[in-house]
Length: 507
Ligand code: GLU
Image (cartoon, rainbow, N blue to C red; front, side, top):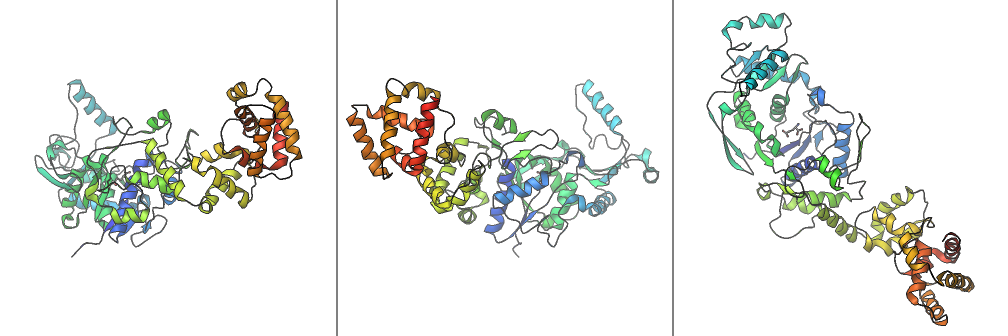
């Protein structure tokens, strides 16, 4: 019988979600939808020392922004609720205990200080300390004959942990859907802690495997950084008697720095001026702000399309994919093994393509809040006209205000270079005279204004460029924007005259 596809995204709420995490969630989502399966959001918050306020909410908000939807999870609930591991506390101990009873795990009583001393000692001899088959019977463990009374220690309230008893010198064969067969010798592994009495909580490894089992996860699709944990996880499935229903694994390639040298980090983003988080984030401890793709003016669809192609290729040269098309085309066998180089210019290109695809009407509700955020109230018809005029110049949504602010507010500064180049000789007098004549005009329409400006230049034996550039400077404060007659018509006579007046006073 075919197994029902059930996949999960299982972030730890230790800070804002990195775009690599968003990509992991996206691939899981695409895979679930493609196979008509279920997608689950499970919050892995058993490490309370790394818990960060607001991180879980941030993860949920970010994925909703990307239109990545869950069938079950901390928000949706579902048949396996609760989906937050801290609320599943009482589930895990029985499995740790089962492993001890079946001889796959043991109690250890070493204090942190004792472990530190063992580490130091090994280092001083030029080695490294590993808690494994070579030492576990000599240390303070339930495997050491000298500690046969370990149950007594436990009942005395002494602190303990349960460690996994990794078998010595065994070949562990694993299969990864992206990398194929992986073989590791068990002697290279250490006896990881599975459960701690200090907080009554499992560690990541135990909680992750137990929950994947209980939630009937069919495929684990996660970042490459978890590949080293796979041998332990496979041993755990076997030891717990769950090998038959062990999920299939796929470890996704890393997102690399733009030069391909190493993993993409938050610092790269800060240094090179691009975001590595989906949404705006304020660190609750330090107040430090990290800008997100939303701040930079990305459309979520463009961001998702860009991310989808970082590590996966469709097998042809199509680049623009709606979510529906991604779902249809996605497959694990076209995920690459090697890391994917991050390319911010490409991200911007996607955004530009998506902006171009939208009609003015579709852009209106996206752009309106940008204008309102500047304290401007604007009516839809006027805004639609402006959108039509500047849309071709937009790469990011933030470009809208840069390209169009003068349609809403008078310029309060003038570009110094342009002033120096354009506001000289007899230009101010010409502009004064132009103002007088413009004030006599009855119709303020682009075609007529164009004609009028031609006449004016001719009549005064002036230079066309000189007049037009100076007039543009008065209207926009610089040397950009759509065709000048269009700007004049849109602003209207009153505003046009006022802006000339302002410039004559200020320049
Ligand atoms: N909690 C782990 C993380 O934060 C999950 C890894 C996994 O998917 O197994 O990435």
